[in-house]
Amino acid sequence: MARLFDNVPRRFFNPLAATANGGNQQQFYAECVLMINALFADRMQVGREDLKDGIVSLLLADHIQSIDEADMDTVSSGKPSVFTGSGRETLGESGQSPEDRMANHVISYLANEEVGWIEEGIDSRTYSRTYMFTEQGMRLADYIQRASSMQLDEMSNYLYNTYLVLSDFTRHRKEWENNNPYTLVILNIYTNIKSLASSLKMLRRSIKRIVQRVTGRLTFQELMDNLGEYIDGDFIGEFTRLVDSENASLFRGPITAMLRQMMDSSKTEELFIRDCMKAEKEQHLTWEAARIQVYEQVTFIEDFLTDGYLHIVRDIRSQMVEYVMTVRLKLKMTMDIADNAQEVLGQFIRKLSGYAAGEDTPESLLAAFRILENYYISQGSVKSGARRREKIENQVAEQTLLTEEEILEEREKMRRMQDVPYTKDKMRLYADKYKIHGMVRAADLPLDSKEDALASVAVAAFAPANQMDVHVDNDYIRTEKVQLRDFTLTDSTGYSERDSVQSEKDNKADHMHDLSQKADLEEENG
Image (cartoon, rainbow, N blue to C red; front, side, top):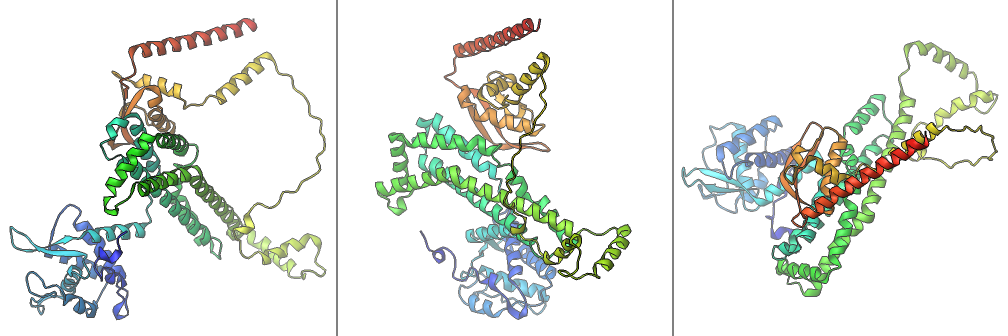
């Protein structure tokens, strides 16, 4: 593994530690790198005037009166400028505004080779001074942006993309043999699952921080603001997309099963190890070292999906329950008193002040003093206590005899409850319903509700079992409530016309069987 300062300049992080003149300039330089990143969003290089105007706008917005130039002097004595022969701006500064002068110093400082956020160059057409954003600066900007907003990735995509990669490799193994199988399969899904684990840990940390905020002393307004932040938080939406009844249950099991089946094949194992040695040639891995690396990555994927994922999800659920219980009790204690109840409360306090706790206070009023001992509500105080086991006494209940119609109605109700909406056979019929010339397009499927979206994902998940191939596009289908990766299902090449005819015969036989059962019931009911 390479060392950090073999890849980044020696003073690369110095701007983020600037606290000169009694002020705090870290935020200014953090905003600088984000502004530079935005300037280079659609351009390879930016002119000096555009860059200076952006920095001047930040100086004015942050009301910065001066920039510490002592550190800049020591840094800028290194690499000379391509225009002036020195690392500092040597043009006349007497006619410039203070903001322009400071912006010129900042540009020269950030362009120095010891800081290395930007690189100075010359436009070959106009011979004017231009700047390019360095690779290290881009990565720093990406980190600052993510750390500032605490945005979470679309975690459900990690599971979906992992499933698609494994499914495609399983069905088209020969096509993958000469197409970097280790990098595009093992390393790809390993990176996906590690990103999922990191995002889930960030999610757990976010909800834990919010829970900790409500355990101390809060005013009613602070409590309501905290509750609003919890309800509007993006992490709730991410969590609901990953609960067991949705994406997790559809993909975790198939991913683990396909991964184990794939690694049980000695030929596939040899394929991955050989490609791993080729992909990691800089490390000069031996056969055994490459085998250990492949199996460590596969083991991490299996362990996380079977155990680590469930552990983190249970922990997040527990924290959410504790938060809701704590807020519920806090609201009861801090709720504003209505105007018409103030007089009643005043009479109660005047009566209560005539007693002393523990002396001649009536038994019925002792509980009123306990509020003084419960000033704070913690997570521990709202957890479920021990259940008291009471003596079980037999009770006689009246029996009700059901009529034949009621029995049939209850049977039909139980049958409907056991009718699982997403199974392989039902997804085959669902695909046939929207199939046009042997092809099903995601854009033709309904996406008006959550059930429609789950059916669309399920029909793609069961496509290989229903003799259909899945082709995933890079675009997304978006509606007001749903965002889904575009895909197309086509009949597999091995799915013959005879299989289609046999499937139709099976459907007709099932239909005749249902009609026969219905006729028998009608005959019994006479």
